[in-house]
Image (cartoon, rainbow, N blue to C red; front, side, top):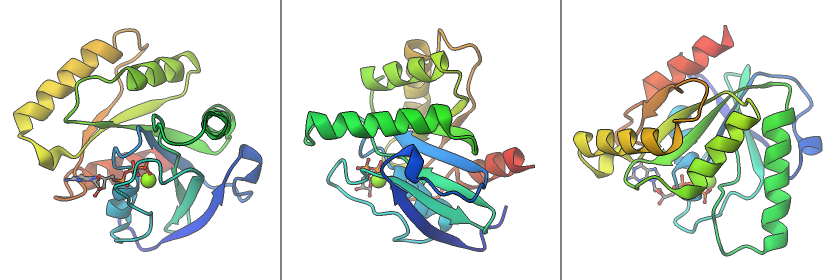
Length: 196
Ligand SMILES: Nc1nc2c(ncn2[C@@H]2O[C@H](COP(=O)(O)OP(=O)(O)OP(=O)(O)O)[C@@H](O)[C@H]2O)c(=O)[nH]1
Ligand SMILES: [Mg+2]
């Protein structure tokens, strides 16, 4: 799929504040700093469409981006950041849970995992929750440029053992790098297949 346009639409703090006009949507979610915003910019081939930050927890609202005027990417707040208040964290988690379980136009969810880290409890717990809620998802292993291919594959195998044993079906797995553009074509092809 060729990306002809990619624009920011709006930021929403709750399900009720999400865009009204129905378009098929694809969500990106993962631990803070995993590379969600960078991946959106990669797909869009725009440097500053989504804000990238070294300071974790930058994206605290659900951000909607419209691609080719026909579908949306949704940058969901990263989970697992420590420096916002409990109250704020709870509000955002609730909005994200509402979105993932109650947004009628949500076609698919991509869970981003840092390919350099051993399986993280918070990712394992989140995937178990998605499985319980029957939310269909794929896994995207990010920052693949930071290590060798074999190290990435070892990390994926370990993650599978830790997190996927109780899942009803094996999710599709993508390996990406916002630096080298690896995985861009695969992800866009997957989205295109779900748009048909
Ligand atoms: N080397 C490398 N660095 C990356 C890659 N993707 C993201 N980064 C860096 O990782 C940091 C976090 O990236 P973001 O895209 O802001 O991560 P995020 O998941 O949107 O973070 P929050 O919005 O805080 O949850 C930035 O310093 C990025 O430059 C990648 O593929 N390779
Ligand atoms: Mg972000």
